[in-house]
Structures are given as structure tokens and as C-alpha cells.
Image (cartoon, rainbow, N blue to C red; front, side):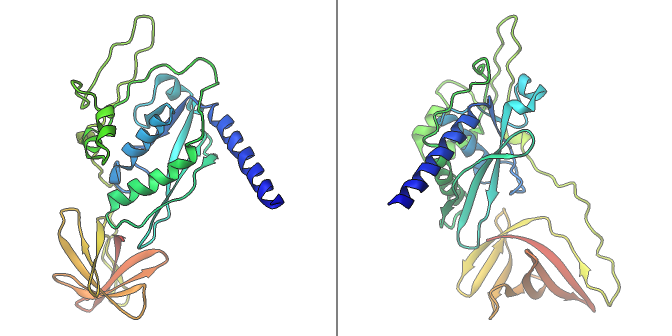
Length: 296
């Protein structure tokens, strides 16, 4: 009983400390693309996190449309990061709030989901992680109360949220949320206009593609920047692209991190090496090792 009382006292103390720390920040900045993902607003993570923060009373903004005072002083804001520790069968997410120096000042509990469909799984895991902020009564204490900032949401994402009541609150009738512009009162700085249309959210990798040229005695390495999604089949997985089109089939072996692989034109094996999935096959006399970006 005494041990339990000590644990509860420490937890409550940490909770109060976190609340006090968060009250020092005026804005909570949500990236349009988290480092854990390759695409903008992938699985609607940015939309959902920004909405949940706003629902809890935090002044959430997107990272590509900062208010003027935050743009000139980044230390007015807390920067949200999503940590993805998902495994093959479980989606696991944690949210970290960092100051302008990149130091973590708050970290949520880890949210988990065993839903197979990625969008629903991340929705459930993020919602569970955000419960860590349920009891925080946020109120900015760093000076003047926050001015109203104009925020726009990803319209299509909002409409796709499971809770229709949430969607209706986020997209009031009679207002076109694709593009909204308000005029600032005289003698005040103009409000920031945030545009989050799908046209502004394409992702194009500018990373150089390594050459496949090599000697016959050395494996050639090819680069595949696409994400392939693993879907369970009877004896393994099929990998599909975002079309979706089946690009390859993986058949289980006695090693859980090694599969026999078959695509339309190639056959070989897929195995994991230092956290990277590799497709290894012969092309003529040359052994080719091709990195694959697989999402289980």
C-alpha cells in the first residue's frame, strides 16, 4: 500500500509538472508529414492529431503555415513528433512534444491497435496515446492570450473520419473549407491563411538513385522507393502498391525473417538485414540485392 501511494504521488507530481510546462507554450505545431512516414498526412495522422489537440483546448497549427509571432520566435511553440514502433501485427504510436531546442518536454503513453487496416489502426493507436492529455487543463500563461488563428483542415480527411458528428463540427454548413481567407482588423497583423488542399500535398523524393552497375563478382544493388503493403495469404503475404496492384508474393520459410519471393518476372528470396528488407535474385550471372520498403 505504501509503495502504491509513492507511485501515485510521483505520477501526480509529474502530471502537474507537465501541465505547468505546457502552459508556457502558445502554439502546438503539427507537421504535415511525420518523419515516420514517406507521404504527407499519411493515414490521416496529421489531420487527426491536429484535431484531437484542438479538441483538448490546445492552439494547434500546421508546420507550413506558422503565425507571424511563432515564425519569428519558434520558442513560442511546442513541436509534435510521432514515434512509430509498429510491428508486423501491432500498430504502436507515441506522441512526443519538443521545445524549440528539440528537447522532449512531454511524452504520451504508447497507443496500440491490432486492426489490420492501417488507417483505422493508426486512428485507434493515436487516440489511445492522446488519452495522456485528457486531464491536462491547458491555459497559456506566457503573456497575452493567444490571438485567433485561421486553421484549415484536410477536407477529404475530415469527411472520412468515422465520427460524423466530429466531421460536422470541423466543417460547418455553408463554409467552404477548401480555401478560406479572412481579413484582419485594421492596425493588427493579418491572420495566417493555411491551405491544406490535396494539390499542395504531393510527395516527390529528390534522393539520388544509386547506380546498378557493378562487377560480376559483386552484388548489384537496386533502389525501389515505393511502399509495398503486406496482405496475409494462406502461406505468406502478397505485396501490393497503392494502386492497388499485387507486385510480389512472399512464401514463408523456416526462418521468420526470410521468405521465398515471386514477382511477375523475377524469383528469389526476401530477407531482413539490419532492419531493411532485401529482395535478392539473379539477373543473368549477376546477383542483385534490391532494398524493399515493406509495410506490414
